[in-house]
Amino acid sequence: NLSDRITASLKGLRGHGRLTEADVDKTVREIRRALLDADVAVPVVREFTARVRERALGEEVSKALNPAQQVVKIVNDELVQILGGATGELHFAKNPPTVIMLAGLQGAGKTTLAGKLARWMKSEGHTPMLVAADLQRPNAVNQLQIVGERAGVPVFAPEPGNGVGNPVLVAMNGVSTAQFQQHDVVIVDTAGRLGIDEEMMQQARDIRDAVNPHETLFVVDAMIGQDAARVAEAFRDGVGFSGVVLSKLDGDARGGAALSITGVTERPILFASTGEGLEDFERFHPDRMANRILDMGDVLTLIEQAEKSFDQAEAEKAAKKLASGEDFTLDDFLTQMQQIKNMGSIKKMLGMLPNMGQYREALDNFDEREVDRIEAMIRSMTPAERNDPKIINGSRRNRIAKGSGTTVQAVNQLLERFKQAQQMMRTMGKGMAGGGMPGMPG
Ligand code: GDP
Ligand code: MG
Image (tube, rainbow, N blue to C red; front, top):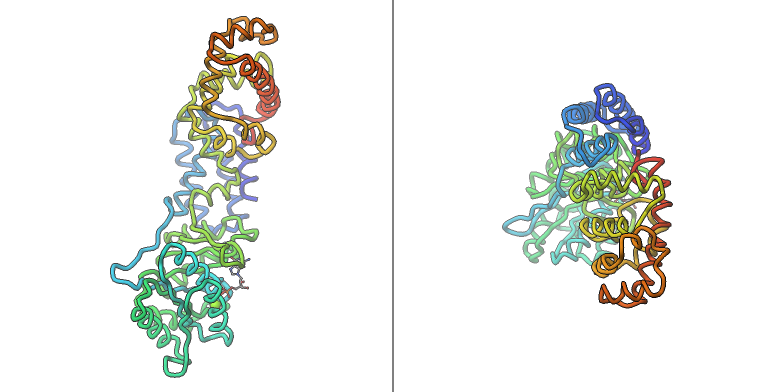
Protein backbone atom coordinates (compact mmCIF):
# COMPACT_ATOMS: atom_id res chain seq x y z
CA ASN A 1 0.00 0.00 0.00
CA LEU A 2 0.85 3.63 -0.29
CA SER A 3 2.20 4.16 3.20
CA ASP A 4 4.43 1.10 3.11
CA ARG A 5 5.84 2.19 -0.21
CA ILE A 6 6.61 5.68 1.00
CA THR A 7 8.03 4.32 4.22
CA ALA A 8 10.24 1.90 2.32
CA SER A 9 11.46 4.58 -0.02
CA LEU A 10 12.33 6.79 2.92
CA LYS A 11 14.34 4.08 4.59
CA GLY A 12 17.01 4.71 2.01
CA LEU A 13 17.62 8.11 3.55
CA ARG A 14 18.63 6.79 6.93
CA GLY A 15 21.90 8.12 8.18
CA HIS A 16 22.23 10.85 5.61
CA GLY A 17 22.84 14.26 7.10
CA ARG A 18 21.13 16.24 4.40
CA LEU A 19 18.89 15.79 1.39
CA THR A 20 20.84 15.39 -1.82
CA GLU A 21 19.18 15.66 -5.21
CA ALA A 22 19.80 11.96 -5.81
CA ASP A 23 18.16 11.03 -2.49
CA VAL A 24 15.17 13.17 -3.20
CA ASP A 25 14.74 11.91 -6.75
CA LYS A 26 14.88 8.31 -5.65
CA THR A 27 12.27 8.92 -2.97
CA VAL A 28 10.06 10.94 -5.27
CA ARG A 29 10.14 8.14 -7.84
CA GLU A 30 8.95 5.72 -5.17
CA ILE A 31 6.22 8.09 -4.05
CA ARG A 32 5.08 8.52 -7.65
CA ARG A 33 4.86 4.77 -8.13
CA ALA A 34 3.08 4.31 -4.83
CA LEU A 35 0.51 6.98 -5.68
CA LEU A 36 -0.15 5.49 -9.10
CA ASP A 37 -0.57 2.09 -7.48
CA ALA A 38 -2.98 3.63 -5.00
CA ASP A 39 -5.05 4.71 -7.99
CA VAL A 40 -4.43 8.41 -7.82
CA ALA A 41 -5.11 10.18 -11.12
CA VAL A 42 -2.00 10.77 -13.22
CA PRO A 43 -2.10 14.58 -13.46
CA VAL A 44 -2.56 14.79 -9.71
CA VAL A 45 0.40 12.50 -9.13
CA ARG A 46 2.53 14.61 -11.43
CA GLU A 47 1.74 17.86 -9.69
CA PHE A 48 2.03 16.34 -6.25
CA THR A 49 5.43 14.80 -6.76
CA ALA A 50 6.75 17.95 -8.38
CA ARG A 51 5.76 19.91 -5.30
CA VAL A 52 7.25 17.40 -2.89
CA ARG A 53 10.48 17.37 -4.87
CA GLU A 54 10.75 21.12 -4.93
CA ARG A 55 10.18 21.44 -1.23
CA ALA A 56 12.43 18.55 -0.26
CA LEU A 57 15.27 20.10 -2.21
CA GLY A 58 14.58 23.65 -1.17
CA GLU A 59 14.09 23.19 2.53
CA GLU A 60 16.86 23.36 5.01
CA VAL A 61 17.25 20.14 6.94
CA SER A 62 15.48 20.64 10.24
CA LYS A 63 17.51 20.23 13.39
CA ALA A 64 15.00 18.07 15.20
CA LEU A 65 14.22 15.63 12.38
CA ASN A 66 16.26 13.18 10.40
CA PRO A 67 15.96 13.43 6.60
CA ALA A 68 13.43 10.60 6.40
CA GLN A 69 11.21 12.21 8.99
CA GLN A 70 11.54 15.48 7.17
CA VAL A 71 10.38 14.03 3.86
CA VAL A 72 7.48 12.32 5.61
CA LYS A 73 6.55 15.69 7.01
CA ILE A 74 6.74 17.34 3.58
CA VAL A 75 4.67 14.57 2.01
CA ASN A 76 2.16 14.90 4.80
CA ASP A 77 1.97 18.70 4.47
CA GLU A 78 1.44 18.43 0.74
CA LEU A 79 -1.20 15.72 1.19
CA VAL A 80 -3.09 17.93 3.60
CA GLN A 81 -2.75 20.81 1.17
CA ILE A 82 -4.06 18.89 -1.82
CA LEU A 83 -6.91 17.49 0.29
CA GLY A 84 -8.07 21.01 0.97
CA GLY A 85 -6.08 22.16 3.98
CA ALA A 86 -8.54 22.95 6.76
CA THR A 87 -11.67 20.96 7.51
CA GLY A 88 -14.41 22.20 5.19
CA GLU A 89 -17.70 23.69 6.32
CA LEU A 90 -21.19 23.67 4.88
CA HIS A 91 -22.53 27.12 4.11
CA PHE A 92 -25.92 27.92 5.46
CA ALA A 93 -28.29 30.34 3.77
CA LYS A 94 -28.97 33.71 5.38
CA ASN A 95 -32.65 33.14 4.70
CA PRO A 96 -33.58 29.53 5.45
CA PRO A 97 -34.14 26.97 4.23
CA THR A 98 -30.62 26.07 3.17
CA VAL A 99 -31.04 23.91 0.09
CA ILE A 100 -28.58 21.05 -0.28
CA MET A 101 -28.70 19.03 -3.48
CA LEU A 102 -27.06 15.63 -3.82
CA ALA A 103 -25.58 14.49 -7.12
CA GLY A 104 -23.61 11.47 -8.20
CA LEU A 105 -23.69 8.15 -9.99
CA GLN A 106 -26.19 5.46 -9.12
CA GLY A 107 -24.95 3.41 -6.19
CA ALA A 108 -22.59 6.15 -5.05
CA GLY A 109 -24.40 6.36 -1.73
CA LYS A 110 -26.55 9.49 -2.16
CA THR A 111 -29.72 8.19 -0.58
CA THR A 112 -27.83 6.66 2.31
CA LEU A 113 -25.96 9.91 2.75
CA ALA A 114 -29.19 11.91 2.71
CA GLY A 115 -30.24 10.04 5.84
CA LYS A 116 -26.85 10.40 7.51
CA LEU A 117 -26.63 14.09 6.78
CA ALA A 118 -30.17 14.67 8.01
CA ARG A 119 -29.51 12.78 11.21
CA TRP A 120 -26.27 14.65 11.83
CA MET A 121 -27.89 18.03 11.15
CA LYS A 122 -30.73 17.20 13.47
CA SER A 123 -28.21 16.43 16.20
CA GLU A 124 -26.65 19.83 15.53
CA GLY A 125 -29.98 21.51 16.21
CA HIS A 126 -31.25 21.89 12.66
CA THR A 127 -34.66 20.85 11.42
CA PRO A 128 -33.95 19.18 8.09
CA MET A 129 -36.40 17.78 5.58
CA LEU A 130 -35.60 15.24 2.88
CA VAL A 131 -36.95 15.49 -0.65
CA ALA A 132 -37.23 12.40 -2.85
CA ALA A 133 -36.46 13.70 -6.33
CA ASP A 134 -35.09 10.41 -7.62
CA LEU A 135 -37.95 9.02 -9.68
CA GLN A 136 -35.71 6.93 -11.88
CA ARG A 137 -35.62 3.76 -9.86
CA PRO A 138 -38.92 2.25 -8.76
CA ASN A 139 -37.79 1.81 -5.19
CA ALA A 140 -35.87 5.05 -4.74
CA VAL A 141 -38.64 7.05 -3.05
CA ASN A 142 -39.40 4.24 -0.67
CA GLN A 143 -35.71 3.87 0.19
CA LEU A 144 -35.50 7.53 1.15
CA GLN A 145 -38.66 7.23 3.23
CA ILE A 146 -37.15 4.37 5.19
CA VAL A 147 -33.92 6.27 5.69
CA GLY A 148 -35.83 9.38 6.79
CA GLU A 149 -37.85 7.39 9.28
CA ARG A 150 -34.65 5.97 10.80
CA ALA A 151 -33.17 9.44 11.02
CA GLY A 152 -36.38 10.82 12.50
CA VAL A 153 -36.65 13.36 9.71
CA PRO A 154 -39.69 14.03 7.50
CA VAL A 155 -39.53 13.07 3.82
CA PHE A 156 -41.27 14.91 1.04
CA ALA A 157 -42.32 12.30 -1.51
CA PRO A 158 -44.24 12.73 -4.75
CA GLU A 159 -47.95 12.15 -4.52
CA PRO A 160 -50.64 12.72 -7.07
CA GLY A 161 -50.86 16.45 -7.58
CA ASN A 162 -47.37 17.42 -6.47
CA GLY A 163 -45.29 16.24 -9.36
CA VAL A 164 -45.50 12.49 -9.85
CA GLY A 165 -43.15 11.53 -12.62
CA ASN A 166 -41.43 14.89 -12.73
CA PRO A 167 -38.36 15.15 -10.53
CA VAL A 168 -37.97 18.88 -11.15
CA LEU A 169 -41.50 19.59 -9.95
CA VAL A 170 -41.03 17.30 -6.96
CA ALA A 171 -37.86 19.13 -6.00
CA MET A 172 -39.53 22.54 -6.30
CA ASN A 173 -42.59 21.47 -4.35
CA GLY A 174 -40.36 19.86 -1.76
CA VAL A 175 -38.39 23.02 -1.17
CA SER A 176 -41.45 25.25 -0.97
CA THR A 177 -43.11 22.82 1.42
CA ALA A 178 -39.99 22.84 3.61
CA GLN A 179 -40.03 26.62 3.60
CA PHE A 180 -43.72 26.71 4.48
CA GLN A 181 -43.20 24.21 7.29
CA GLN A 182 -40.19 26.18 8.49
CA HIS A 183 -37.53 23.56 8.09
CA ASP A 184 -34.17 25.29 8.06
CA VAL A 185 -32.49 22.73 5.78
CA VAL A 186 -33.79 20.81 2.75
CA ILE A 187 -31.79 17.91 1.35
CA VAL A 188 -32.75 17.00 -2.20
CA ASP A 189 -31.93 13.43 -3.23
CA THR A 190 -31.58 12.98 -6.98
CA ALA A 191 -31.27 10.14 -9.47
CA GLY A 192 -28.03 8.76 -10.83
CA ARG A 193 -27.04 6.45 -13.64
CA LEU A 194 -24.51 3.72 -13.62
CA GLY A 195 -22.42 5.73 -16.04
CA ILE A 196 -22.25 9.38 -16.92
CA ASP A 197 -24.82 10.33 -19.54
CA GLU A 198 -26.17 13.56 -20.91
CA GLU A 199 -29.78 12.88 -19.94
CA MET A 200 -28.82 12.44 -16.31
CA MET A 201 -26.72 15.61 -16.33
CA GLN A 202 -29.59 17.50 -17.91
CA GLN A 203 -32.01 16.32 -15.24
CA ALA A 204 -29.58 17.27 -12.48
CA ARG A 205 -29.07 20.70 -14.09
CA ASP A 206 -32.83 21.20 -14.32
CA ILE A 207 -33.27 20.37 -10.65
CA ARG A 208 -30.38 22.65 -9.79
CA ASP A 209 -31.89 25.54 -11.76
CA ALA A 210 -35.29 24.94 -10.22
CA VAL A 211 -34.22 24.90 -6.57
CA ASN A 212 -31.05 27.03 -6.62
CA PRO A 213 -29.13 24.97 -4.09
CA HIS A 214 -26.81 26.72 -1.63
CA GLU A 215 -24.69 23.61 -1.61
CA THR A 216 -24.46 20.89 -4.21
CA LEU A 217 -22.72 17.86 -2.81
CA PHE A 218 -21.12 15.43 -5.22
CA VAL A 219 -21.31 11.98 -3.63
CA VAL A 220 -18.72 9.53 -4.85
CA ASP A 221 -17.76 5.99 -4.00
CA ALA A 222 -14.17 6.01 -2.73
CA MET A 223 -13.71 2.49 -4.04
CA ILE A 224 -13.72 3.62 -7.67
CA GLY A 225 -10.19 4.94 -7.26
CA GLN A 226 -8.80 7.13 -9.99
CA ASP A 227 -12.01 6.87 -12.01
CA ALA A 228 -13.25 9.29 -9.39
CA ALA A 229 -11.29 12.05 -11.10
CA ARG A 230 -13.08 11.53 -14.43
CA VAL A 231 -16.52 11.25 -12.83
CA ALA A 232 -15.86 14.31 -10.67
CA GLU A 233 -14.82 16.33 -13.72
CA ALA A 234 -17.95 15.28 -15.57
CA PHE A 235 -20.14 16.38 -12.67
CA ARG A 236 -18.20 19.58 -12.17
CA ASP A 237 -18.72 20.50 -15.80
CA GLY A 238 -22.21 19.06 -16.11
CA VAL A 239 -23.88 20.21 -12.90
CA GLY A 240 -21.24 21.93 -10.82
CA PHE A 241 -20.81 21.20 -7.14
CA SER A 242 -19.57 23.04 -4.08
CA GLY A 243 -18.40 20.10 -2.02
CA VAL A 244 -17.66 16.40 -2.12
CA VAL A 245 -18.80 13.49 0.02
CA LEU A 246 -16.60 10.43 -0.08
CA SER A 247 -18.63 7.30 0.56
CA LYS A 248 -17.63 3.71 1.35
CA LEU A 249 -14.46 4.79 3.06
CA ASP A 250 -14.94 1.76 5.28
CA GLY A 251 -13.66 -0.40 2.43
CA ASP A 252 -10.13 -0.88 1.17
CA ALA A 253 -9.95 2.54 -0.41
CA ARG A 254 -6.81 4.21 0.80
CA GLY A 255 -7.19 7.69 -0.44
CA GLY A 256 -6.65 7.41 -4.18
CA ALA A 257 -10.12 8.75 -4.88
CA ALA A 258 -9.81 11.52 -2.32
CA LEU A 259 -6.54 12.79 -3.76
CA SER A 260 -7.76 12.46 -7.32
CA ILE A 261 -10.95 14.42 -6.74
CA THR A 262 -9.53 17.27 -4.72
CA GLY A 263 -6.46 17.42 -6.94
CA VAL A 264 -8.56 17.74 -10.08
CA THR A 265 -11.60 19.75 -8.98
CA GLU A 266 -10.21 21.80 -6.11
CA ARG A 267 -13.49 21.34 -4.27
CA PRO A 268 -13.33 20.40 -0.59
CA ILE A 269 -14.36 16.99 0.68
CA LEU A 270 -16.79 17.84 3.44
CA PHE A 271 -17.96 14.47 4.70
CA ALA A 272 -17.01 10.85 4.74
CA SER A 273 -19.41 7.92 4.73
CA THR A 274 -17.99 4.88 6.44
CA GLY A 275 -20.65 2.20 6.45
CA GLU A 276 -24.26 1.37 5.79
CA GLY A 277 -25.58 2.57 9.15
CA LEU A 278 -26.80 6.13 9.68
CA GLU A 279 -24.15 6.72 12.31
CA ASP A 280 -21.34 5.75 9.93
CA PHE A 281 -20.74 9.32 8.96
CA GLU A 282 -18.15 11.90 9.84
CA ARG A 283 -16.85 15.26 8.83
CA PHE A 284 -13.85 14.93 6.59
CA HIS A 285 -10.55 16.10 8.05
CA PRO A 286 -7.78 16.52 5.47
CA ASP A 287 -5.07 16.02 8.09
CA ARG A 288 -6.55 12.73 9.24
CA MET A 289 -6.92 11.52 5.68
CA ALA A 290 -3.29 12.41 5.02
CA ASN A 291 -2.39 10.36 8.09
CA ARG A 292 -4.51 7.52 6.88
CA ILE A 293 -2.77 7.63 3.53
CA LEU A 294 0.56 7.60 5.28
CA ASP A 295 -0.87 5.22 7.85
CA MET A 296 1.27 6.42 10.68
CA GLY A 297 -1.06 7.24 13.47
CA ASP A 298 -0.50 10.77 14.63
CA VAL A 299 3.25 10.43 14.46
CA LEU A 300 3.48 13.67 12.56
CA THR A 301 1.75 15.61 15.26
CA LEU A 302 4.22 14.09 17.64
CA ILE A 303 7.13 15.12 15.47
CA GLU A 304 5.80 18.65 15.43
CA GLN A 305 5.51 18.74 19.18
CA ALA A 306 8.92 17.21 19.57
CA GLU A 307 10.35 19.81 17.23
CA LYS A 308 8.88 22.52 19.39
CA SER A 309 9.89 21.31 22.80
CA PHE A 310 12.99 19.17 22.46
CA ASP A 311 16.39 20.64 22.73
CA GLN A 312 18.28 19.05 19.85
CA ALA A 313 21.47 18.32 21.71
CA GLU A 314 19.59 16.92 24.69
CA ALA A 315 17.51 14.76 22.41
CA GLU A 316 20.55 13.34 20.69
CA LYS A 317 22.20 12.61 23.97
CA ALA A 318 19.08 10.90 25.24
CA ALA A 319 18.70 8.91 22.04
CA LYS A 320 22.28 7.69 22.25
CA LYS A 321 21.72 6.62 25.80
CA LEU A 322 18.49 4.94 24.93
CA ALA A 323 20.08 3.11 22.07
CA SER A 324 22.80 1.78 24.32
CA GLY A 325 20.21 0.73 26.89
CA GLU A 326 22.69 1.50 29.65
CA ASP A 327 23.45 4.25 32.09
CA PHE A 328 19.89 5.40 32.35
CA THR A 329 20.05 7.31 35.63
CA LEU A 330 17.58 9.08 37.85
CA ASP A 331 18.84 12.37 36.40
CA ASP A 332 17.90 11.17 32.93
CA PHE A 333 14.61 9.99 34.29
CA LEU A 334 13.92 13.45 35.66
CA THR A 335 15.02 15.21 32.46
CA GLN A 336 12.77 12.97 30.45
CA MET A 337 9.82 13.49 32.72
CA GLN A 338 10.27 17.23 32.43
CA GLN A 339 10.53 17.13 28.66
CA ILE A 340 7.49 14.95 28.44
CA LYS A 341 5.64 17.34 30.70
CA ASN A 342 6.65 20.19 28.42
CA MET A 343 5.28 18.36 25.45
CA GLY A 344 1.84 18.15 26.95
CA SER A 345 0.05 15.20 28.28
CA ILE A 346 2.14 12.08 28.30
CA LYS A 347 -0.91 9.98 27.73
CA LYS A 348 -1.84 11.97 24.68
CA MET A 349 1.68 11.91 23.37
CA LEU A 350 2.35 8.24 23.77
CA GLY A 351 -1.14 7.46 22.58
CA MET A 352 -0.13 8.98 19.25
CA LEU A 353 2.62 6.51 18.68
CA PRO A 354 1.66 3.35 16.88
CA ASN A 355 2.43 0.10 18.66
CA MET A 356 2.30 1.65 22.10
CA GLY A 357 -0.46 -0.59 23.36
CA GLN A 358 1.99 -2.52 25.49
CA TYR A 359 2.74 0.58 27.56
CA ARG A 360 -0.90 1.50 27.98
CA GLU A 361 -1.07 0.33 31.57
CA ALA A 362 1.97 2.32 32.62
CA LEU A 363 0.47 5.35 30.91
CA ASP A 364 -2.84 5.04 32.64
CA ASN A 365 -1.04 5.22 35.97
CA PHE A 366 0.81 8.39 35.08
CA ASP A 367 -0.16 11.56 36.89
CA GLU A 368 1.47 14.72 35.62
CA ARG A 369 1.51 16.40 39.01
CA GLU A 370 3.67 13.52 40.09
CA VAL A 371 6.49 15.02 38.08
CA ASP A 372 6.83 17.84 40.60
CA ARG A 373 7.00 15.46 43.54
CA ILE A 374 9.45 13.25 41.70
CA GLU A 375 11.59 16.27 40.97
CA ALA A 376 11.65 17.16 44.68
CA MET A 377 12.72 13.65 45.63
CA ILE A 378 15.43 13.38 43.00
CA ARG A 379 16.77 16.79 44.01
CA SER A 380 17.08 15.49 47.54
CA MET A 381 19.38 12.71 46.40
CA THR A 382 23.15 12.89 46.23
CA PRO A 383 24.84 12.59 42.81
CA ALA A 384 26.04 9.12 43.78
CA GLU A 385 22.48 8.07 44.61
CA ARG A 386 21.15 9.44 41.34
CA ASN A 387 23.73 7.53 39.38
CA ASP A 388 23.26 4.28 41.20
CA PRO A 389 19.91 4.04 42.98
CA LYS A 390 20.81 0.60 44.28
CA ILE A 391 22.80 2.23 47.08
CA ILE A 392 19.69 3.94 48.41
CA ASN A 393 19.10 1.98 51.61
CA GLY A 394 16.57 2.51 54.40
CA SER A 395 18.26 5.44 56.10
CA ARG A 396 18.91 7.17 52.78
CA ARG A 397 15.24 6.73 51.86
CA ASN A 398 14.32 8.36 55.14
CA ARG A 399 16.60 11.30 54.48
CA ILE A 400 15.28 11.76 50.92
CA ALA A 401 11.68 11.64 52.13
CA LYS A 402 12.38 14.30 54.75
CA GLY A 403 14.36 16.46 52.34
CA SER A 404 11.62 16.43 49.72
CA GLY A 405 8.69 16.72 52.08
CA THR A 406 7.31 13.38 50.96
CA THR A 407 7.15 9.95 52.58
CA VAL A 408 9.30 6.84 52.55
CA GLN A 409 6.52 5.08 50.65
CA ALA A 410 6.67 7.76 47.99
CA VAL A 411 10.43 7.30 47.67
CA ASN A 412 9.95 3.54 47.43
CA GLN A 413 7.37 4.07 44.74
CA LEU A 414 9.64 6.37 42.80
CA LEU A 415 12.50 3.88 42.88
CA GLU A 416 10.15 1.12 41.79
CA ARG A 417 8.83 3.27 39.00
CA PHE A 418 12.32 4.23 37.94
CA LYS A 419 13.21 0.57 37.69
CA GLN A 420 10.21 0.01 35.43
CA ALA A 421 11.08 3.04 33.31
CA GLN A 422 14.62 1.82 32.98
CA GLN A 423 13.23 -1.47 31.76
CA MET A 424 10.92 0.27 29.33
CA MET A 425 13.71 2.48 28.06
CA ARG A 426 15.84 -0.55 27.40
CA THR A 427 13.07 -2.10 25.35
CA MET A 428 12.50 1.13 23.47
CA GLY A 429 16.20 1.62 23.12
CA LYS A 430 16.49 -1.63 21.25
CA GLY A 431 13.74 -0.45 18.93
CA MET A 432 15.46 2.88 18.43
CA ALA A 433 18.78 1.36 17.61
CA GLY A 434 16.94 -0.32 14.74
CA GLY A 435 15.19 2.70 13.34
CA GLY A 436 14.82 6.16 14.79
CA MET A 437 11.72 6.77 16.85
CA PRO A 438 9.65 3.75 17.77
CA GLY A 439 7.29 2.96 14.95
CA MET A 440 8.94 5.49 12.68
CA PRO A 441 10.65 4.78 9.42
CA GLY A 442 14.24 5.23 10.30
P1 GDP B 1 -27.42 6.02 -4.45
O1 GDP B 1 -27.81 5.22 -5.64
O2 GDP B 1 -26.36 7.03 -4.80
O3 GDP B 1 -28.59 6.65 -3.77
O4 GDP B 1 -26.74 5.02 -3.42
P2 GDP B 1 -27.37 4.32 -2.13
O5 GDP B 1 -27.45 5.28 -1.02
O6 GDP B 1 -28.63 3.63 -2.51
O7 GDP B 1 -26.23 3.27 -1.78
C1 GDP B 1 -25.88 2.21 -2.65
C2 GDP B 1 -25.42 1.02 -1.81
O8 GDP B 1 -24.23 1.35 -1.15
C3 GDP B 1 -26.40 0.64 -0.74
O9 GDP B 1 -26.40 -0.78 -0.64
C4 GDP B 1 -25.83 1.26 0.51
O10 GDP B 1 -26.19 0.53 1.66
C5 GDP B 1 -24.37 1.18 0.25
N1 GDP B 1 -23.62 2.23 0.91
C6 GDP B 1 -23.85 3.56 0.89
N2 GDP B 1 -22.91 4.24 1.60
C7 GDP B 1 -22.06 3.31 2.07
C8 GDP B 1 -20.86 3.37 2.88
O11 GDP B 1 -20.37 4.42 3.30
N3 GDP B 1 -20.26 2.18 3.15
C9 GDP B 1 -20.75 1.00 2.71
N4 GDP B 1 -20.09 -0.11 3.04
N5 GDP B 1 -21.85 0.91 1.96
C10 GDP B 1 -22.50 2.03 1.65
MG1 MG C 1 -30.50 6.85 -4.36
